[in-house]
Amino acid sequence: MGWYIVYFVLYFIFMLGIAAYYFKKITTYEDYLISGWNTGFWKITGTIISTFCGAAVFIGWVGLGFTVGLSGYWKFAFVAIVFSLILILGFAKPLRRQRLITLADLFTVRFGGKAGIVPSILSAFIYSVPTTALQMVGMSTVFNITLGVSLPVGIFISFVVILIFTIIGGLPATILTDAIQSIIIIIGVVILAIVTVSHVGGLGGLFEASAPEYLSIAGPDGYGEILLYALSVGPFYLVWQSTWQRIFAAKDEKVAVGANALGFIIAGLISFLPFIIGLAARQFVPLDMDPDLVFSYVTDFLLASPLGGLVFLGLLAALMTGATSFILQGSSNLTIDFYKTFINRHASGKRMLFFSRISVLIITSLACLFAYTVEDIATTYQWALRLTATVIVFPFLAVMFWKGVTKAGVLVSMIGTATLVLAYPFLPIGMDHALFGFLVSFILLIGVSLVTKHADSETVQAAYFEKLHNPTLEDK
Image 1: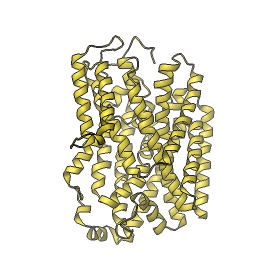
Image 2 (image 1 turned 180 degrees about the vertical axis):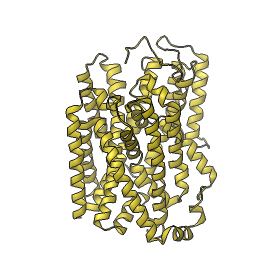
Image 3 (image 1 turned 120 degrees about the vertical axis):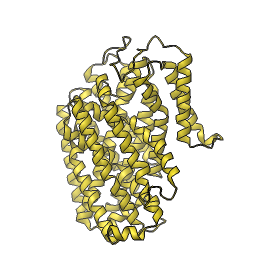
Image 4 (image 1 turned 30 degrees about the horizontal axis):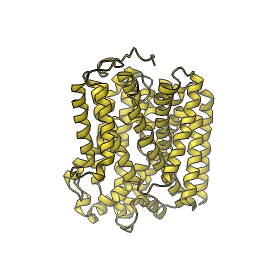
């Protein structure tokens, strides 16, 4: 326990020191929310690795490897990386040209008025709150395994530390600490993978002892399940605002494309290791164990305090950085899409900065409350991804490529899809609920746009090909 205490205390002192340093340097809400459009190559690369490798990677994906083997990588991690690279390589330059801060901003400028409300609500409350809660649950698990702290107390400690760091340091502190923490994360997961595989006789022994279905791409559930999962979850990463923030935070287009792409490629390589760990764990962990506990059990079982402390520190770093990124995503939505657009359009920079920090308090507090209800990390994360993707992906693509899309088409599509996807469990429908949501979104978007006219508040442009300019809105 002594090693764990030393590691954790030094880590939190370091994190809060970085936050205090940036507290004095941050003077505008743009500095606070998107790091002033001026972040360098390696900081962007590091923050992508750290943000991607959060609770879902360390805890959820080890558990997924434990339950379905290596197929979990192909149906979740691999498709997440592929769609993220599509966003970066295909959309980073036209998105930066828009000079926006949030995903909802894109809809507000294209359609005017309240068009950004639905994506903003989804981003701030349906995604940011539950995913931040997952990081708190993960951190509380670390405190429970290493220090014997009860889970409810651990959640509260996590809430306090995350809140103080995020309110003080904003995205500049997050990006810098992410870059440093990415090294800790890589070292931690590599150490655990080597030790776990060695414990079961090396890769040869692991593959020989594992059932074939746990080694194949198809896995126990077959190729149909892999493809269905990929199509229902992967598109979310086209509208993952955490990546959008990193695209906007980069100092130029070259960094926005190169650094983000490199970050996801490295993250994709790292993400294979949790599934290897989970697969190896099947050889010595009770098969009826809760998958979310496998990571902590393996680390505590195989590693003495000094090395185990380093691995747990890597997990803590991943959880901390994931939480701050998701909170700032939700804070951006509340500050730009609600406060600036609907409450105080002429707010001063100082007032915007103040409300940015208030919105961090709101998102973090809601996440803390939600954390006390989380029972399954992987399922909760997948639910947030699927709902966001089904509602937003087709409207986003329409804004980028189709001048004919109308405000009515987008609003009916987003609201109708969200309603039907939430009602899906009560409907007599046999198809997968995510594919059902995508189909509804596409039909409503195209159908309503074809039978309605452009509203007076719209700017009839395709954002992929030109910079949007809406004369009914103030220039941002």
